[in-house]
Image: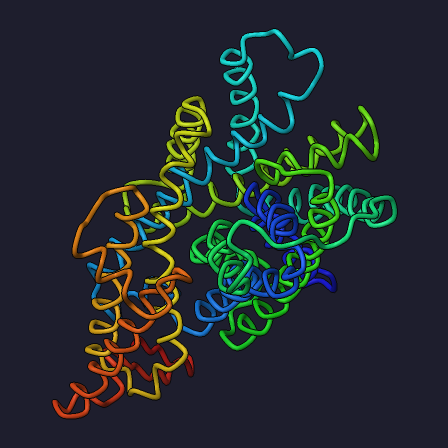
Length: 454
């Protein structure tokens, strides 16, 4: 490990996390939350920064990573859950979403695009975009070099220019809260943090970051945890600073009227501050942010599926992921976004409960029944919430969901998850399962290593 490797890998992690949603949602939150901004942004940071970091810490703590954590419920659950997560944050949702946002913000505002066939322009843009994604993703050892050392610093400089000038030039004050921030602003921000998809992305990015450290000669598990912690804190600090800055810029713009979303706020701010040059600046920010995230997700999918399917090598998976992402990108952003909210509402509670249980694993002696019970109770209400988000009328079932505590805050799964955990602990205690489950422990005296798997 060289002196600044942790810094550059931290920048790499930041660049992979910082995509379309990370740019869009904070300024919109700022504009809507008004005088409740600090509560709202605190909730947002809790799920958009804190939760991803907790996921990374959990992955670093457990030998075998997230797959081993999921195996504590059941190997079938672990594989099915991770495949769904990787496909969703990869080629079927997050990748095309980021590519579309990069196109709409980086290309569509350009003056010479006006009056042209946008379908053809999107096709040409996506060809170039995904060709570059494919070439950089082919060799995961290049990610830290290209993303951490070159692209991320450019992105950060552009963000600093936008935010600093915005702080100085914009004189708007916090307005009256709207859009659901009038009451329960923290919980509203908490749910909005889901939309970054970073907690799910952390499940995938953990393998990329651990690989980056291992390629630098770090094999000791204790050292890996330490370096993962440093890189995660660097990325998390930068993310939180950017979110607060973008949120403040959004709050200052609220006085100028209502906006449809965060992209409109940032486009207006850039143009008002820098004129036509601002269009290029915000286009550069969006394009770089979305590009780095797509590269990170593509590489993560390549590493995961090439390990899951022995006959599928890394380069083949990267190619297939790129082709699927390219194809879905050309379907348009609106169709992609229709799927994202219901999926997130379903997947996030399961992820949160699974990761929280990981940190209390030894407190309940690793009993599998605790994992199964907690995830079962959580899963039922997470699926109901997801179906409701799709617009399905579930009648009395939805009435039960709505009557649960914290349902108004979008946390109707919390008490079922808690109940499921308690039931699991009680069953484990009275059935004699309250012992640490160790399926393999091999003391290899020849090399002095101990392999353990729980």
